[in-house]
Length: 216
Image 1 (cartoon, one colour):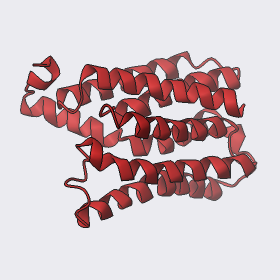
Image 2: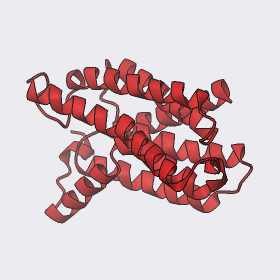
Image 3: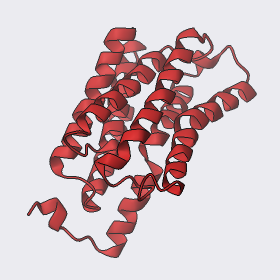
Image 4: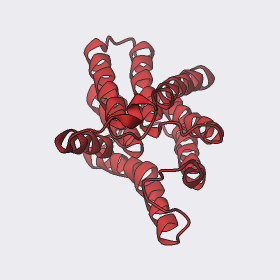
């Protein structure tokens, strides 16, 4: 039996792992990334007011987190999925497609907006590609969505360092540690095997690299 499946965490450890999984849910990562860009590269938002920046942050959350999550909730209420946690590969198919649509829309909008960081173009295209890859791989393995998102987030920060010619050593280190904590939490909760975690990290990172190469 796989060690990850056999491991039974104590209540406190399981509670911590669940809290990490909720706070760093894949749907929240785009919002966290734009917060990071607003904090690290404020000059990229120089053309808008503070109120407009808040609206932009809210709209990012609305489009990349709320609507996909609400769609999953509706699928659950309509008995099209057994759980809002999407524990099986079959339950993840429709949510993948829905999320893919919203990520593509954000990428499309980013191509025509001049009041936001250029880096968002490759980031949005990268996460769109990760949902495409995730949907395809979902036919074979239950790839970790958390790992997929964290692999993309860490790589996006690394690419921002190259793109803006700014050393982000501390930020990259912190993001890597957070990614490790998130992936460990998924293993603690027996949600995935080691291979599903590693595959998620690799695919998330690769899709950001493809996005950077294709868009920039």
